[in-house]
Length: 401
Image (tube, rainbow, N blue to C red; front, top):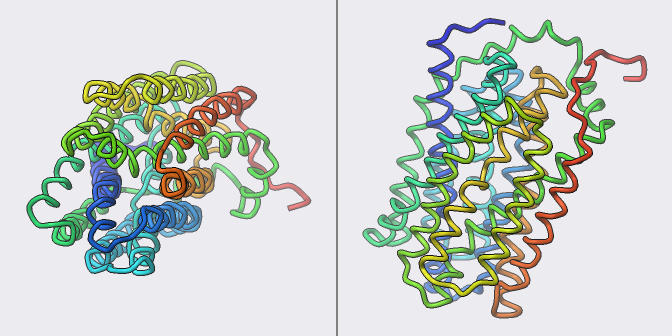
């Protein structure tokens, strides 16, 4: 399959803008934790559980939405999901009970974020770009998505300061609709790759489930989800608990987003040249080192900024490497679906990162135990990636399938 350069640029820009909004809108949920729990007198676990459900629904629905995108095209999935995004954020603005928050932020926005997320966009990119450009293209798209966190973090805090948390969510609901026109740029020629494999969906799933490397990737991505969601949800509150100003948390989250741009782009470039599994192991181990230094050294605004920079370089640098490995091993025909399955594992980790952060804080009055868990899990994820076999599999139907 060949795609002209202009179309490739269009896919990359539109996909990146969709991810900018999809990631940016939800990554700022941590700024709503304190105002909502204080207004309604909730324990932090109530808010944390809703965000945990958000991540769980996001992950659980991703393989199915990926399969729909593989069959019917990503643009249709993105349009419907963008509408759900607006509905969910609007409903979140009137959520006065825990179950309402779980329904709006958890279920509705979770489904919407899945349909506008990485697996959907990366499925299009993986099919459009040739293998020698694929890792780099995914890295660029992840970097554009990272810009959403850098840009939207201060925007969301400013909206909360100006309109209150409820008014801010209504503004964000309107912003989410911008993703609808962007969907038209995802030129997804699914039929052009259909001849590359005679596999059915069932056969592709069976092959992946029988491949140890697939499960190792899922294990590593679980840890990735735990890390990024715990930090995004609880870092602003943690810094406020330690007596630092609101602006420190905003700046730290924004720095994570800013330097994530460079980290995602660099990992995509490096993944096109070096062995991806070793790069992934290095990312996870480096996260453990960064978290350990942040948790153990004296806390100050400067240490928070340093953490934002260092963790940002590693934040989503797993995305181009992990999805590049999936494409290299299993091909691109069912890339959105298989990426969605691995992403489900990521979101199970996200569930525990968000929920346990609030639960253990309510029990102990501290985030210390969760920081320790994050350090240990990073080391485990690094070890998971080392045995992965970066070898393309034969994608032929077998007699037993």
